[in-house]
Structure formats: structure tokens, C-alpha cells
Length: 266
Image (cartoon, rainbow, N blue to C red):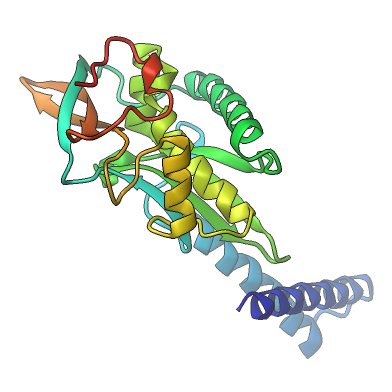
């Protein structure tokens, strides 16, 4: 399958190069009404039009950032709330500004990138940061905390993105506590690292689940380690954010939770 994809990518690349050559030759010779010219123009238009539609179909604007609104294919990893875990309220606060400002997001992305570099240096020293952080609109899926997505490119590689819930990031910024995002962020970084290493990187696969346990991170399939989830609800005309620690009686604190202010583990 991977070989077929590479052959397909090479065919598309060759077709585009040939088409551009025909178009440029036709323009320079003032010969733009031939069948070859029209066919080449159609190939170029179709290639970029459908590629753009595929990308924009999964993205929308969010304060100058592109935000995931539904799962593009393939979706390689996602952090969700496990329904059979016990929800413990860590804290609540009133949401006065629904969206994250552009300046706050730029500042926060620097923290995310610094954390990712440190995480890989410790756990996956051969993996580099070759992806982009983006915000995920959690209103469209209240249970979704994060997602790693790889979009296949023409030349046999992938453009990688790690999406984080805007509600989760908002809570972290409001509380001035980066550790709130660490369990979900680290979970998504493991998806990316194993994907780059060519190992089982999807939820439920042995390689991935073993890495979560080795590092100490929440899983969809058990609650050996605690997870953090942010929900929102309207109360008396106000929007209230609720930061929850999801766990059961056997759950251990996930990576980074020891730094959370005032959280209890009993």
C-alpha cells in the first residue's frame, strides 16, 4: 500500500511537471488553444483544487489559526474522555472570553514546542519536532481533548499536526498552570513519536499502550493513569468551565500532574 502511494505521488508529480512545461511553452509561443495546453491546465487545476478542498474541509479559522472541526483521514491518534472513569472536579471558573486571543496562543505555542523538545529528548531522542500545533474546537465534540493527524503529501511524506482542545488550553492559560495540558499533550506526542518510528501508534495497539504505561500517561482502554478533561456549561446566564480529573480507585497520577496546584489523588 505504501509503495502504491509513492508510485501515485510520483505520477502526480510527473504529471504536474509535464503540465507546467506544456503551459509555459504554450504561453511563451502564444499557443494556448491546443488540446495539450487545455489538458495540462485541467490537470493543474484539478490537482490543486481537490487538494485544497480536502485540506480546508477539515479546517476553519480561529483567531487567525486553522482549527480542526472534524477528523481528516487518516486520524492517527486522539485523546478522549473515558466514560467509565470517575469524574472529580478540580476547579471551576467563569469563562468571560470564549476564544483564546492570538497573542496568548502564540505565546502558548512556544511553551508547547519547548515541552515537546524536552519530552522527545528524554523519551525518544531520535525523534525531532516536525509538526505544527493547532487548536481544536471542542464545542463540536465535548469529549475530545486532542488529536494527532498526518496528512499525506505528494512526495511520499506526511504533514503532521497535533491539535489540542481550545477549552483545555484556555483552562491552562486561565490557571497559569501548564501541567493541566501535560497528560493530553504527552499522549499526542507519543502518537507522533511512534508514527515517526514506524511502530504501532494507534490507540489500542500494543506498542502504543506499552509506551503510555512506561511513561505514565492516560489510555482510552484503562484508567491506570489519571486524565484531565475540561467541560463547559451555562449556569445562571454565565458560561462555567469545569476542570475534571478523571480516574478510578486504582489510578495513578499521570506525567506532570504532581505539579498541579492543590490537586488530590485519594
